[in-house]
Image 1 (spheres, rainbow, N blue to C red):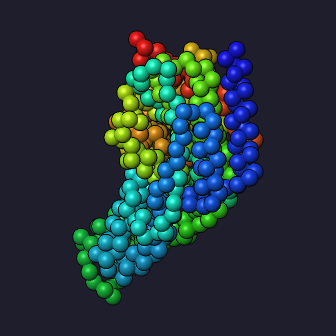
Image 2: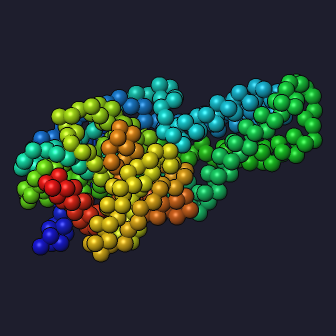
Image 3: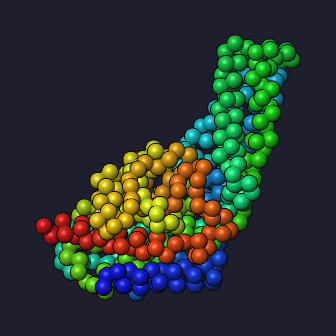
Length: 409
């Protein structure tokens, strides 16, 4: 009977995302389309929850990838300065570039955000209470904004890793040369670069085209964002629907949430948890986060134990609980840390405020093998395996049931 219910929920989820994508299209943060979809999801949450809410926050979405163009400008300037034996000036520029790369890209810090236009993001969520006193809370979450098209995934995607590693590797190499040259030849404008440095600078000059290509890493256009990640927001709606219909939860509150601006460095989830981290009237009892991102392929399900390029630790126990439940349901799943240089998920922002969080993902997740539709115009509903959505729903439902049972005991 439950399996039939899950199939019905899956059909509803696909119907919802088909309608939203056909009506509004891509949803870059701050766009009317993204705000309209947030409004539509608020209405969906209102139908299946006791209350629904939308929260506006300020965000500078272009900042998250904006550091790339700053780096592209600085690199050739620093390169020329090194050829002119002005290493200390080049070093200052390269250290600034590396700091931006590390803080913005590796750690998702908001360093240059004020330099970019401010826009409005909209987070939405619904609250479904149990029949008795709340002793635990489970946040089931996704994000409704869509990503910018990554041109590197559209044009010669087999070269993605080489383009990234050669480009970023050249930046670190030029920084190292700047440091060494600053020590041994601190400043001698007009002098000829010594042959040891020339040997290094020649290949770093030859990699300049790879640096320049980074300028067009991302398009100004957005993807349809079906699998990444509107389907996860629809799953959150349907999980709430399941428990709204069954009325079986005794002590566990469900918060079905859809964040904005995930594709701009998790800014939406960050705003949500910054606002509510001390809100004990909302986040009651023991709090868990079952986040979902990119549920494309049924055979590729895994649960994250770390996030944001490995810099944030997620809940090992939550990931293992989800993995164990997946196995009892007959599905292959593993728990593992996120791969370096592959980004982050909204679960990181929950973990930062002490919530037991993990993210369910269902696609190959490294820079050499990802879904062929990821961050491309082909990220449409038909790119998502229906079974992957059913499995995500079933695991989420059983995880919540187990947490509620523990609250009863």
